[in-house]
Image 1 (cartoon, rainbow, N blue to C red):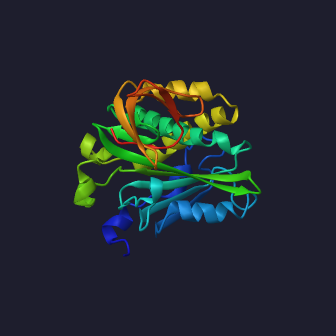
Image 2: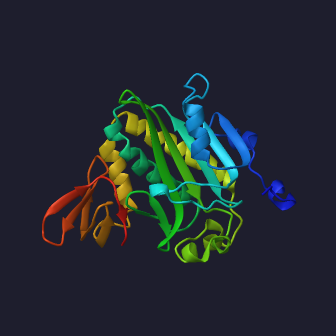
Length: 271
């Protein structure tokens, strides 16, 4: 499953990404692969070697993933033309704050897309990026611990950019969309990555300063979920109710159908 000539001619270039990249550390080190199994897997391997060998903010980027990872172990299909990357982080904090990294990443992606394209971007809690109610981006955050101490965090981001949803299996085609399909234009993937790195760094800095409320308020501006009647799958049961708020920890506050208030820190919104 090698890249063909057309695919090779449109490859991302680490040197072009770093040219005019307005960040201090996010994206200043890039590990590029024409194709691999999963950027998150490679990022974890590199993070385990430590900060001295893999600096904070290192990007792992692939043109194509053969085994891309989504939430709950789902496969994330990653054809050429998309943006498939992972970011290596070494946060100095407790693991209870990690769920908010997923929230702030969703905000960074939404702001990036809003700046580059005249489209309405929404976030379905906690981290699905939607356009026209169809998924354009997914986020997967994974952590590494040692003796219960947080050692590293990997943030995987997959964006349907310059690819077509027709390349995806029929069962998910009607739930997915790409930026190319929405705009009708080729997508400047390098520029998009540069903007994303800047937005991510800004919000990661806020997160490290524990400015959680500022992150949450920005998330609410893009929310597809708040104010809606939803069903949330939390693994062992499905809860129905109205999504009324999100806490500074990133938990969804649900007013259940029986009138009780419940905070959900992890789950999948079915509607």
